Image (cartoon, rainbow, N blue to C red; front, side):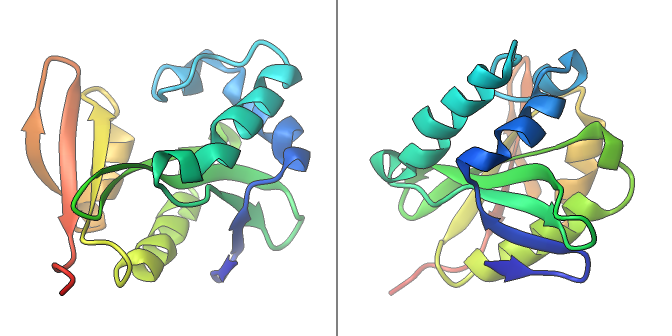
Length: 163
């Protein structure tokens, strides 16, 4: 568990399905994620069981839920979800739009990156070119652009090579 001023970052649980569904059912969210739009709460449960709980099969790390300290509400997710190579992982994150523009994701990602900087060599983010909010946030967090294709901009944050 990781703690910030306003958030608790903890492993995602089945009980988070309703909070995930609340935003994963929105077109405005699904268009920016690698997951399809959740049509019902069962889709959210399936995502937790068949993706978030299976991180070891991908040689990855647990998915963290972002929980508000003030209410206990789960408002988003962060994961180093795929091992790319040489201790370098792809990051994914999502947040309920009700909590956008309040600094929650920056607060969470800052703590998350601080925690993992001694465990991984680098973190890569693949962001859709029209996702200006995520691009801006990642650049604030010292990610640099390393490539792009027709759909995505690829950013990376390097730490150091482990001996």
